Image (cartoon, rainbow, N blue to C red; front, side):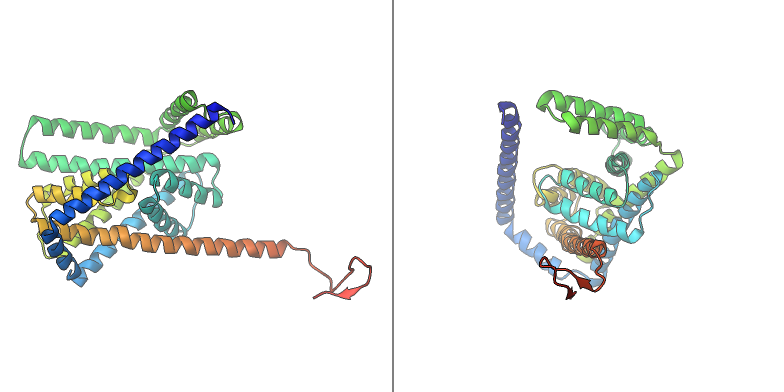
Amino acid sequence: MTGHDVAPGVARRVRHAVRDVVAVALGVAVLVALYSQRGDFTGALHRTMNATPAWSAAAVVAEAVSLLAYALLQGRILAVGGMYPRVRELAAVTMANDAIALTVPGEIAFASLFRYRQYRYWGASEADGAWTVVTLMVAQAIGLSVLLLMAVVVSMATATSVGTAGAAVVGLVVVVSAGVVLTHREVVVRVLDALVRVSRRVSGHPRGDLAARVASVLEDMRRHEMSRHDTAVVVVLALAAWCGDLACLVSAFAAVGEPVPWHGLLLAYGVAQIVAVLPIVPGGLGLMEGSLAVILVGYGASRVAALAAVLVYRLVSYWLAIAVGWSTFAVMVARRRRRRARRTANDAPVSLGRVAPPDGTLTEDA
């Protein structure tokens, strides 16, 4: 192995070590903060344990709607390339993907790879599978940007300022630009091609056969363009997925008997979601709860009530999603093994009843 091959591996291990140290430090900071406010935490935990069953169930339903919208979003994008998986299959992949994204370090890469392999298993080409993964990311970014833009508009309605108006303009530019990216695949291909070239210059990868394969995939990705109607449907489904998750948070406030701080809810939710995708701790565990509760308190919610609502929300959207998602993943793996075993059995040579052993003596087949 050459020094050129070793250096990237060493750098990767250093990055992982730094990320783990930061994650541990943040975890310790969260524990210290909780201990210093243990009275509030105890009160919030008590309210969480006594949450209204009906509203808690509503939170579960809202999160299920969010996952269904995401499943339909995948199906719509795959349909552009001529793929039409059943909703049941899309829902299973969505739940398993959610569990991976919430628990595996480097969740974005692993979750994207998982989805890509599922699309390939269903028969999608390399280009269509890659395009679907990229389009999903762009669509999710648009949906969250729309929510943040709405949060800025609400803020402008309650407190007019030049800075707020500027943020609204920036948000609008982001949404429009992302929409252009969705409708013009060539833009995405050029960006990805530029990223590949930068990666090759910095790390020397991809190269050889892999570089040729990546170039071929990028070229094939130019084949399809999304119509304006498809783009509109994709954006609506992405926004529906975010709104379902937001409805889960709203239901959590109702479950603990606390009024919803509507004027700050969208901003708090949007910022917390951005914090959650930072590649520090899986699913933003600890970071999302803290940022969401702090911003909600800043907009008028009491500390105990805000923390209780956040705990109910995360019990549904994080812990329950992990349990259901990994169970779904296990079922998917078991089914695939059974199918592989059946194919192997069907491909085995069929005996006519008598076989000849090596010594030449004819015996009855078992």
